[in-house]
Image 1 (cartoon, rainbow, N blue to C red):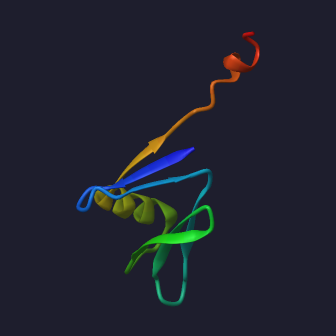
Image 2 (image 1 turned 60 degrees about the vertical axis):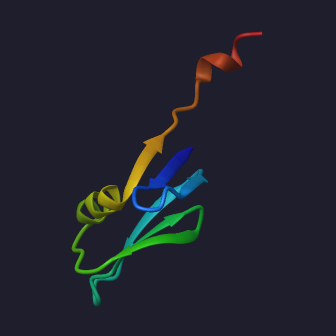
Length: 73
C-alpha cells in the first residue's frame, strides 16, 4: 500500500502499485499509481532520477502488510 502526499497542495493519493515509465526518445518520466498517471518529469534518464524527482514533490509512504496478524485469532 502506497500513500503519496503532494507537498505543495496537501493532496493525498492511495494505491497498491506504483510504476515508473521513461520514454527513451523524449526523456519524459511518468509515475503511475494503480494505472493512473500521477506525476511527470522532464529530462529523466533512469528510474532513480525519476524517483528522486517524485520525492521532491511528494512525500511517499509505504505500508508493509503485517503478516503476523493473519495468524492471531
